Length: 105
Image 1 (spheres, rainbow, N blue to C red):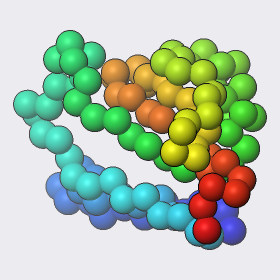
Image 2 (cartoon, rainbow, N blue to C red):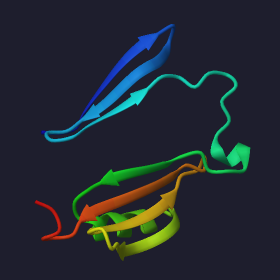
Image 3 (cartoon, one colour):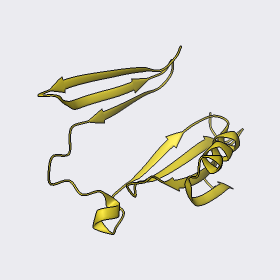
C-alpha cells in the first residue's frame, strides 16, 4: 500500500497531519506559531527523532548521495539496533535504525 497523507487545516494552516503506510503511522501535530525558532536559530538541539526502517544501509547510501549532513555512520548498537544519524537543514537530529536479526521477539 503506498503511503497516504492526512491533514486537517484550520485558517489555512495544517494543525494535524499524519503519514500512514500499510504497517506504520506517524502523527505530526500542530503549527509552532510565530515565535518558533528551530534548533539552528537557537544554537542548540531540541530533540532527536528515532525512526525504525528496513534496508538501513541502502537508506544511508541514498542519504549520502543526496548530501545529508551525517552525524553518525551506520553502527551496530549494544541494544540490538543498527543505526545512523543525520541533521536536517533546520538542525533537527534524525536517527534511523533497523533491528538486528535475532535481538527481538
